[in-house]
Length: 171
Image 1 (cartoon, rainbow, N blue to C red):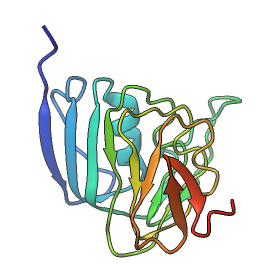
Image 2: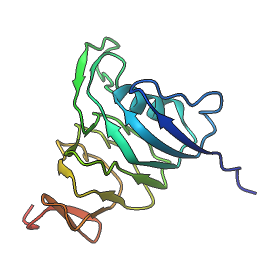
Image 3: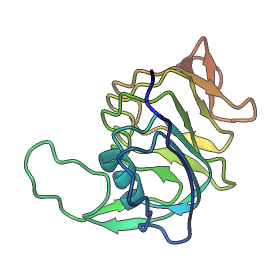
Image 4: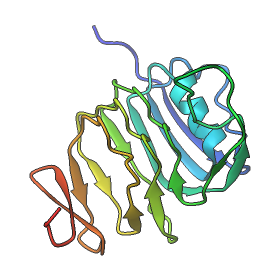
C-alpha cells in the first residue's frame, strides 16, 4: 500500500511567513496562493521532504534582502546578506529536490525569471511549463533533470521534445 497523501492549500499574506505547521514534513501536495519570497522557498526546499506536487500559479514573488533566503554556501557556513529579486524563482530554490512529480510555476502578470542554480539537481516526472511571463533563466537550469514545455505566448523561450530553446530555436 502507498503512503497517504497529505494535501494542503495555503494563502500566504506576508512574504517570508509561510506557515505549514504542524505537519510540513508529511505534506505531499501543496498549493500556495498570495505572496512568497526567498525565505518561503527555503522553507519548502529544506522542511518538506515528502513534497511531490507544488502549485505556485497564483503566487507573486516578492523582493527579499537578508541571510534567511535560499542561498547555500558550498564553501563554508557563513552566508552574507543577499538580494533576491521580485519575480524571480530564487537562487537554489529547488536545489537537489529529487522527489517531485509536478511543479507549476507562477503565472502572475509581471515579468518572471529563474535565479542561478534554482533547479540544480532537481528532477520532476512531469514537464515544467514555463509561463508566458518568464523572460530570463540566469543559469538556473544547470544540472536540472526535467523536461520543459513553454506557453506559446512566451516571447523569449520555446521547447521541442522537452528541451528548452530560445524563441527562434537557435540556442
